[in-house]
Amino acid sequence: MNNLSVVAVIASFEPAGDLLEVLDHVSAQVDSVVIVDDGSPSLATDPTGAVAGVLDRCAAAGATVLHTSENRGIAHALNQGVRVALERGAAAVLTLDQDTHLEPDYIERVGDHLDLASSVGIRRVLASPSRINEDVAPFWFAERGLTLAFEPIQSGLVITREVFDEVGLFDEGLFIDCVETEFYLRARARGAHALVVPGTGIRHRLGRRARWVPPRPLRWLIRGGGAGIEFSEDAPFRHYYIARNRIVLYRKYFRTEPLWCAVSIAKDTISRGRAILIGTQRRSRIYLTTAGLAAGLRGDVGRIPERTRRRAEGISSVQS
Image 1 (cartoon, helix red, strand yellow):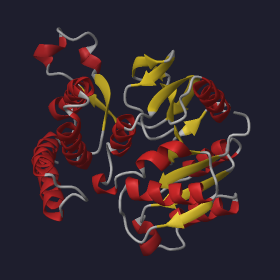
Image 2 (cartoon, rainbow, N blue to C red):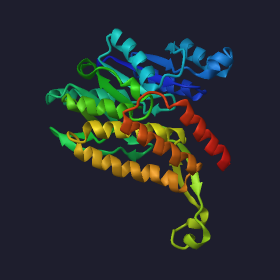
Image 3 (cartoon, rainbow, N blue to C red):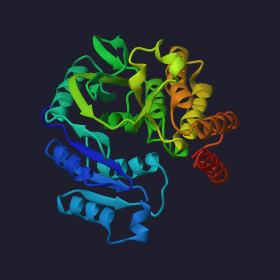
């Protein structure tokens, strides 16, 4: 699909200079780029400062830069950009985070794979990379000989116009985290497929690096325990959104997607449990996870309540 029209949508929040590098890498591969800044506070407090400078340089480099008046979440930011992309006649939309770098032939390989999918009758497609930071992206079944992604991440996702026409836009009620997962499950329910594109890779920052040094009595049980164990952890506030939004998804899809729910629960328990057990600000993470689970069971959506955020900050300050 050499003539595939692709518009990239990049959600930004307090962007640094690496956004310019991302723009440089992607602009050569797509028809145009839309950057949506999700209410970066710096733009209000310092309208001529570093963040404004980065966005101005992106605009000077040819990107369309949109601003939201307040922080309304990544789903809202993406939807703003997707609307512009579809108005421009894009056949597909590439969604990116502000720190994600694509390989030089990424869109070319995606286009070829969409051609292949179309040849076997698959046109409603979410195309995702096969490698994330050189790790193999999760996958599971095959559809007509093409590998299906288990749960594609938002950054690096190429979504055909037919999918948006069929299922609509991202769910803004989720605010952040699991936004692409909800969209993916909704698309699957409508007959769309999330495909892994062979030979494609992205570099994407996944949380912050942390190190845990086991207590001395345990070090002999853990190989290299004296040097500590390195792992990635999210910011504590994201435990609220992840716990809440996953519960929302499990309640909605446990009948139609039981295998996905079971695997997701196991993977998320390991990932979040590790951060709670050996990560930083553990008490705050426990509180936010519990609050998120309760909110999900109540069916709450939107931004984290201010009282919950303040209490979590209070717990963090006591811990430090």
